[in-house]
Length: 333
Image 1 (cartoon, rainbow, N blue to C red):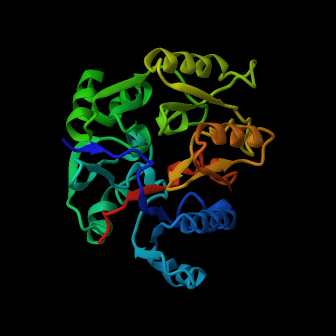
Image 2: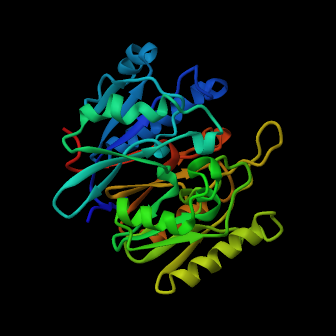
Image 3: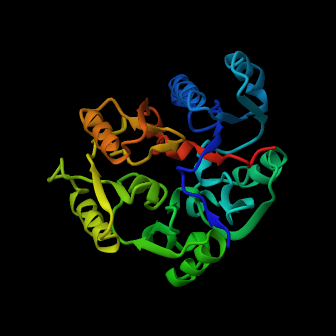
């Protein structure tokens, strides 16, 4: 039985897509590029390569930018957006054989054009692999899935029940799908927790993440008892405690960030990347940054916590985990 690998297995690379002027990053392009550079250097420091999707028109400039870094692999490609967590391939293992697995991606329930994104794995990444790539017909985003080494999988009801993903597919049918394709021994579908401004309908990677030592880090709101998010995120913590009574819970503080138009942005400290010996952790230049990093250090005592300024990423309603997809050792050719 093939099972989705937890994020803390040894990784050999991270997939990214470089922002360019024809993406939604246009108003913040220089700041986005600076964040991507900081992130790429942090990935390289963790003994991992970077697979970088680059628009054809930007290839020469980006290659020059990283000319001294041989572990950046440039892949000329066309894509709609840079949220590779949701369309990049997943990796499964049966203990001896690795497989790459893609689901269909339709722009988070047909909210945005994703035709180019949905072709990235087969068109540009398959040639980079030494393992077979399997395609599933169901619409599932990587950010909607969180699994541990025991095959406990977390997802959210709000995301899965959007009918523009898989029609009237029931939660039990999702549980069967995740058991069959991802080897999930138990699927917990959470009912609570959602961040204002979140286009994904409550992706789990903005809400709750496993640790290797039977812990769960979740996006709390205890620091903001009058915040509109308080009841939902407080209920999320109670729900996690109910489903996972043997686990230690670690509550992250909630920042309060608004767009220039005054809309609340879905900033989450749970949107971190586990990469070999480090936690690449989003910060937002907010008063809560220090507490969030301290919580992560407590939850992942064997990891170095590396803060990455993601204040520009949240302007496009995502963060660090959303723009990355880790690739375990043994997958790439």
